[in-house]
Amino acid sequence: MNGGTCYQGENSYVCMCPGIFDGENCETVNFTKQCTLDCSPGQCVATGDARFPYLCSCDGTLYPNSCKGK
Image (cartoon, rainbow, N blue to C red; front, side):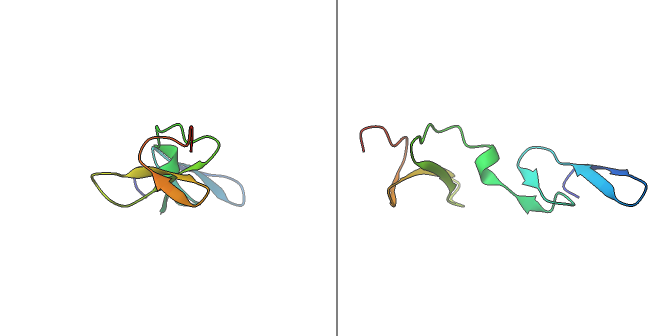
């Protein structure tokens, strides 16, 4: 699924997922895999907005670039 490559084992299988996809069958989108913002010590969150796909969450407040000095 979603361009993943799955390999059959003896009793199960494992999928190698490309890009932002995760999950047993590459069915889950994990936007934080693509985040390029330096949000430390906060965290990068996916917004679902094409203009601002990621924001930094710094103590519960969202900022567009980083948490430094916040």
